[in-house]
Image (cartoon, rainbow, N blue to C red; front, side, top):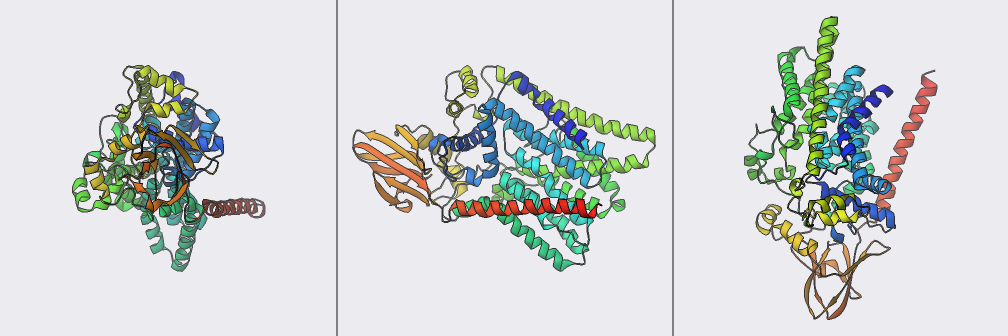
Length: 577
């Protein structure tokens, strides 16, 4: 096992090595959104001025709510990495490396769970590391990659449910991976839960102890809620008291669907030639050998193929989105492909295992060589893409993906220097995207109408990013943010600070209920400023104190951890002797 993990570590290093050697920073389309998230918590750790909800340091000190709704726990971990490295380059390399290692180890663990031999389990882990869904983080800094890194864990208890008819559900082993996913990337958690439902339906049908199944499932759900309480409560807290603008709605979901291809891999567009070959071989093998397969293998193949179809252009996604508007929350149908990657890679190696066991030494050599060759080709492919990214860093104009229209400095050399600066805040001022996700909107327009008619990106850029009315911003010890400026005359102004319905607002020493203050369509504070000095303090007060919510979560997590430690000790010393 240690040798297997060491191999995964080496391959992870090989993938990120071009970035290490050339010292370039990936400026993908999501990089500024996540750099702002991590920087905000990094500064909170550094100063000790904590605010669970407000972004007081990131996102132009606007006080908008992001981390509370987007994997606070994982963002806090990334912020600790940033606090240790104090460099965007070092942080990005280490974070990408850890993402790759995590994906390789979780896939390796899943492969071992279902009986794949160690050498093929290592290959499955490496193949998954090189998949576009994992490398979406390494290549573009899209956090979907971190969700993909943990997703294989959710299938370990699902496989256990198929294998154990007497007690299909181990409540703790099911709850832990689901809770991890919710706290890392909630959309990945949704995908994972949808994917394991068929496994548990089959396990429910085949078990004779259906009452125990229901009881264990209920306990698992309860544990998930308690271990993810801060994330789940944050959604309730914010969405129950505000009309929140959803993330960007794709203009054409069909064009953002997934395809098999003979071109290079892309998470949103294509699998690439290597994975297209693997998927097609696996699908063909499943169809031709359906009757001879075990029930568990049938479930793996059925779910994997179904999610591949769901992610693809085989479905009329634009038609569906126009008739069922809730579907648009998916944003990109290609998201479903991550489940296909996991299950079809697993199925591929299960097929190889069966052929390998039946064949003679010559056939074993051919099969083993084929699997190794495909895996190495995939590693080479990703490594070459990283080399190409290194070249892009050196050219002028600097390629910055979807950020190229948001650069706020005059030269590309200044972009490079600012991202390498010891002052981490310089990078955030270099590229500013008007991403309006999770802003509180008036409710006059639907989410779709806001994006199509009101242009929230432009509103945010004008009201927050380019708004220079406030001359001094300061984060106070209680986590609220203070704004000071001087007016030449009395007039109505829009301040670069976002107000939610549970925000606390103090204007020129007068406390005002947040519902009584004027706001723009995207929640920016609108007020009549007096002539002379003006002072505004904005904080956030949830219905239930987060200290209580976090205490319940921490006690639950520690209790589960202690239970597992005791169980391991008891099993080792009393049952193995």
